[in-house]
Image 1: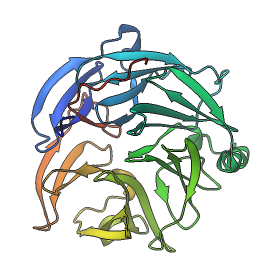
Image 2: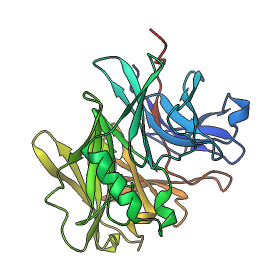
Image 3: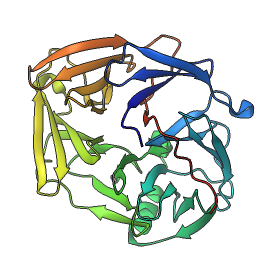
Length: 311
């Protein structure tokens, strides 16, 4: 597989801009989503070259799309029965050469095996905890939005608390969970020691590992701490000084380049891309996303011909 990566910026007319991850000002190409009845879809997660898509009107039908080759597969969840998922995710199991889609509902979760084209429905201790949270947040409609999981090597991560079902924020009241790609189980992830009172962090993916970024009160006027979970434990990767009073909700850490620069999506509408060089401790590049683009979290994809097919 190629290591070349790109940002997939979606425009309001249903097209996608392929921007160079190393230089996000450069639009390498632009193309329409191939499935006409899925025009202007929502990107629900990405893993390598694959992107999970759905429409805003249908919580049963999904599309797995190779953004590089423009191949796609439509699949329908047989267990939804009119319910909307609280969380979704996409990951790759290298042991089985299998792409897996995870949908988390109120009392259970399902896994779709793209290569085998089949489903399983599961419940465990974690899904029962999520069910308790769901039953307690009926007055918080915003928390019912489907949360896109953070894909890393080996799994997909989310967080939840007593007030919100699934999201990316981590504080002292949060529980971090993940889908283990080897066992197909939802599991709890031990909360990092670095998360203390008055601090707010957000989950991200860095170098294939789960990471956290944030700081005091979730206001990065005080600086943005970036941590990464490696085999030896949590390591402070860098501290980014900030001259703008953005809240953590106005920043998305998308990933890093081959040279180690950090790519951030920032702004009150997440309308700018910022490249930060930790070696020089400064912003080295900025790019504005078109006003005609969707300002959601931008998927990062690889140039790869991989596409799961039936065995």
